[in-house]
Amino acid sequence: MADMARTAQGDPVTPADDIEAQFTSADPELHRNKQAAYKIFTILDEAGNWDRVNEFKTERYIQHDPFVPSGSAAVVKFFTETHGVKPRPVEDKLRMKVVAVVAEGDMVTIASARYLTNPHDPSETYTTTWFDMFRFVDGRADEHWDCATLDMKEAPNLVGV
Image 1 (tube, rainbow, N blue to C red):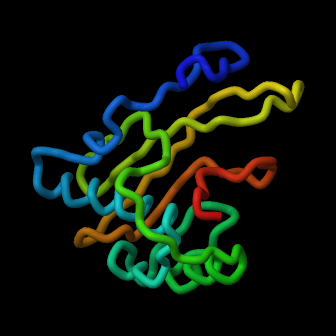
Image 2: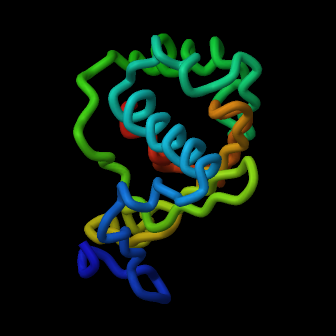
């Protein structure tokens, strides 16, 4: 994938060789939070198993994304009713192309590669980086940030949508 697309000014964003290893840590608390983030992506976002949301997100789950509402029930409704996401089997590995995962205290930040259509030449693609950051409470995501903006033309890493 490294030669798939060049950015307008720089080298393409390249995913980690071992994505699953990015979600581990020798520190037990950081490991628990990284694993919870991994499961949010594989079980909820990619496989659409939103009936399991309470395993991974708190009830009050605060969402700092202009498209997605706060609260675990509202998030479930957003994906299952608004976007019609249906549950599928969970895959063995994460499909999202993760570049790095950094954890500190109760926070986990995931950087992933995005492959987008060049708005100046629709026959070309380019890469950039998407960020998700979670704050965890007792091993469940309580808050989420990303870099979504209202003027986005292409959906972010909503693999299940």
